[in-house]
Structures are given as C-alpha cells and as structure tokens.
Image 1 (cartoon, rainbow, N blue to C red):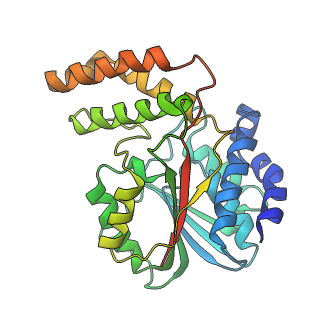
Image 2: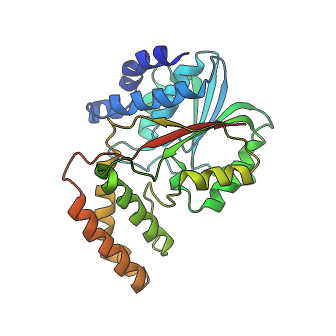
Amino acid sequence: MNATELTAKAPSIAAAMATADVSPGIQPAQTRYRASLVSGWDIPAGASVLEIGCGQGDTTAVLAEAVGPRGRVVAVDIADPSYGAPVTLGQSAEHLKATPLGARIDFRFGLDVLDEAVAFPDGGFDHVVLAHCSWYFGSLDQLAATLVRVRRWARNLCFAEWDLEPRSAEQLPHLLAVLVQGQIEAGGSRGEGNVRTPFSRESLLRTLAATGWNPAPARAVDTTDLQDGDWEVDACTALLDDAQRMTRLPRTVRELVLSQGDVLRSLAKHHGNTPLPAYSLTAC
C-alpha cells in the first residue's frame, strides 16, 4: 500500500482505536503520523511483521492495514496489559481486536524478547518494527541485545525514534524534558516512564553497526501535529515534584536535575510545546 493510500485510510484506522473516544482530537494526528512512518518502510501486502514495544497499538493498527488480510502482525510488549492510562494496553488491544483489523493482529503482553524461553522461527518474519519504543529500554546494551536477538527472526528492520537535535528553540522544552528524565533514570531512580534511555541518532547508528544491521539513510518525519512535547514536559515536571523519586538520587545528580527543572519550567508553555523532530530508517 503506497503512502497516499495508507494516509487516506488513517481516519478509519484512528476510529478503530479505543482512545478515539477518549481523546478524539489526539488519535487522528497520532495515526496520521504512524501512517507516514509505515508508508516509508515499504512493507508490502501479505507481509509478516514482528512489532517490538507495541504499547497501545498506534503503529500496530497501521501495520495491520498495510499488510492486508493475508498478512499478520505479532505485536509484543514487555508491559503488563494493565499498564497505561486513561486506556490500558489490554483494553486498547481488546478494542482493536474487535475491529476488522483484529484478525491480522496477535497481541502478546508481558513478553520479554530477551527471555530465552521466548522463541520465534528463524526467518519467520519479513520485518521487525521498533517505533518510538527504544527510549523505553533500560540501556543501550539492552537495546543492542534485542537487536541481536531479533535479527534471527526477521530479515528487515524498521525503526523510528525522536531526534535529540532540535530544529528550533520552540523544541527545547521537549528536549530538556527527555534529557532530564534520562538523567533521573541514569542516576539510579528507576521508574516506568516512556523515557528511560534517550540516545542520539548517532548512537543508534553505532549500535546498529555493532549488532550486524546495515541501515539505509535515515529520513526526517514530520511531527508538527503531535502532542508528545506536552506529554513529556508534564511527565518530567511530575517526576521533579515526586519527592520520593528525587530522594533516591545522589545529591549531586538531584541538584543537577532540579536546576534543569527550573530551566524547563521557565521555557515550557502550559500547552502547545513543539515536539522534537523524529527520524525513520530501515536496515537489513
């Protein structure tokens, strides 16, 4: 399915999501963005796809549309189905499974692909997808181990993530919010947020090379309509206000992130913080 066809399908795909009723102004923009990602990966009809870190299924639904009725998407996430708000992962999966796209999707939550008990057939998938989930990993080493493991199962990698290089001053609050969250995690105060290990595009390229993947040139993806800048600013300020999380940090780290939090609050808007750019690539 080409980019035009997939983009045209975005409204109906968005309507299939459980969050469409909860956040009717948000889901269409998120789905259009995922449609842009998937169309750039040239995943053909009939393909088999393994999606790592599927979350609530924003990219999963678009992948299911792209592969068509003869394709399949195995969507896995290490999180428990009760994770997520205002709609949990499990609720979102059940809602999506009840739509015409559902027959093409196999959701598997609470699944760690690094667990030796987890196995898929060698070469069993045409593509493995990691879309905006890699910053959730506990470390670059964990990501590297995952990339090594999934290489046995799929011939092609499709990857997308935020870019730490802002294009404008308006993107600085989003940048600072993710860097502060990463510093809190690196300082030893571990949590369950979406940002744990924010790394640069250059770090990703080095990791791909070290794990045997040969990437094609990355392309920029338009993030203008997304709400993630606001979400990460809110997530970061909530962490900074969490006294229990802050006390678990070494004093020097705590002072550093609290000072950066002061800067974040001075730069961030109450609403409408411009999201960082993102990049997308394929590798084989």
